Length: 155
Image 1: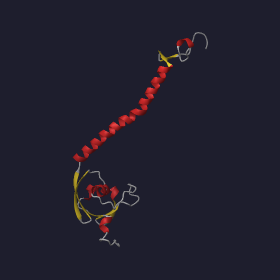
Image 2: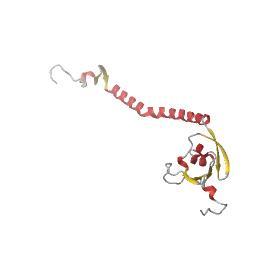
Image 3: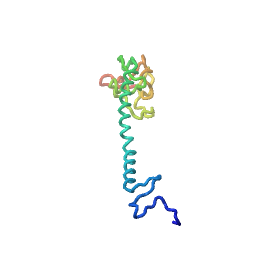
Image 4: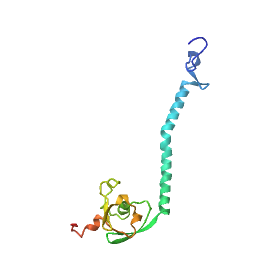
């Protein structure tokens, strides 16, 4: 270094390993502690805040589910069912989760595999792509409704 100019990040032996950071004198030990504390806060902070947000969203979802539910009457396999469902519930979820009719499967959830196929008014549809509230009064037949006792449907 030439003349009187001195690098502010260089320390001399007699300054006890101090560096000048933004005009303040800092020791290496204090600097390392601050970096470690900041890094820990950045790493841990989102998970702590995220868990609180998840708890709040679960509570909000539970409250919304009870307040926004819609009564829907479904005719499934010749039986009448009255359900209170969220308007966003798919027909597949209503069949499997609310009525325990688990013959229709949740495969791809995009309507590509056909595992969720049911008959609505004699026409096959993918139940994962339609909402339960859209089928009020429709005649819905699941795989359970095709069986005749122990005999299989031969159609």
